[in-house]
Amino acid sequence: MTLAEKVNLTTGTGFFMGPCVGQTGSVPRLGIPNLCLQDSPLRIRNSDHNTAFPPGTTVGATFNKDLMSERGVGLGEEARGKGVNVLLGPSVGALGRKPRGGRNWEGCRPTICGASV
Image 1 (cartoon, rainbow, N blue to C red):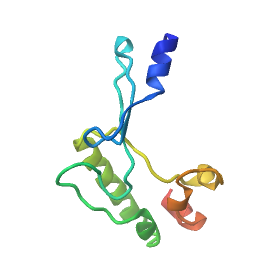
Image 2: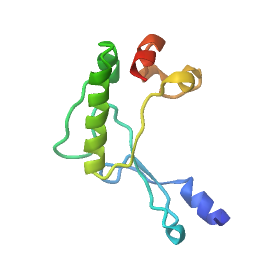
Image 3: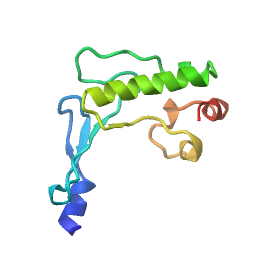
Image 4: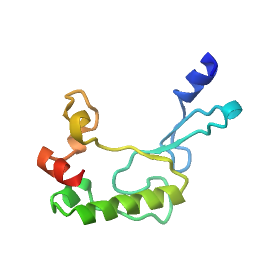
């Protein structure tokens, strides 16, 4: 991979284009497509006819792993159907304990994270 291809692959290229809040670059020579990124943890933003899902903290507070899984599958299926490749959101585990993490406030208490993973 050339330096220009590496830069293109790791640089954001689009902002609020369709359901994408951002996109990665692509490397056509190697067959690597761009990725559509979406950052709403409750629904697929900037799209029509979407489902409003309950917040992760609400679902996590039930400690019901089946419900958590159903929510994740539902979000994933809707995202895939709208052309979204990556759902951005809060992290769990060791990454969620970093004080400089930008989305840690959206995460859950460690006990809820432990129950959901």
